[in-house]
Structures are given as C-alpha cells and as structure tokens.
Amino acid sequence: MPTVIRATGEAKDMTLDEIAAFVEDARKAGIPGDRNVRAELSYSGKFKQVEVALREGCGE
Image 1 (cartoon, rainbow, N blue to C red):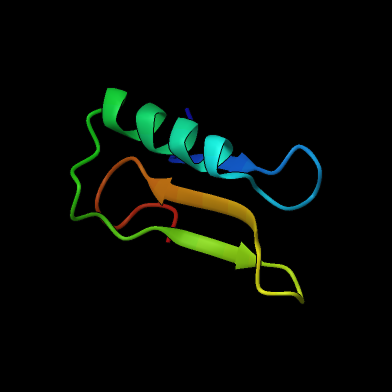
Image 2: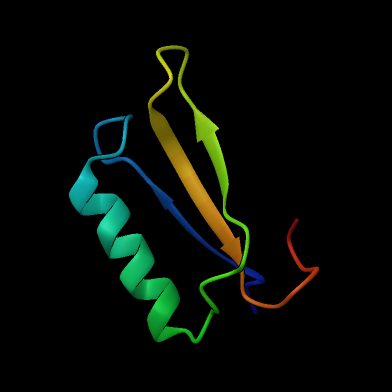
C-alpha cells in the first residue's frame, strides 16, 4: 500500500493544473491541509515532483 501521494510534471516541470490536481487528490484522500508537502525542483526552480504523506510521519 502506498504511503505517499506523488505527482510529476508530464513535460518535466509541473503546470498549475497538475499541481491543482495533486491538491485535489490529496484532499480526496483525507489528508489535512496542515500536512507538509515535499517538492523536488528543477535547476530553474520549477516543480518537477511533489508528494505528501498519507499518514503523519510516513514517507518523509
């Protein structure tokens, strides 16, 4: 069973729509809004990947 919800950009860097879909998926999974999100950035400072733990203390 996965311990995180993860999203990556279809074309390397993520778009606002992809980030919004990630947030919507996290909300549907019942993840609270105060949970920390981990992000991997490209050299240009753009989001490449984001993830959030399904439970506190998992996958971080």
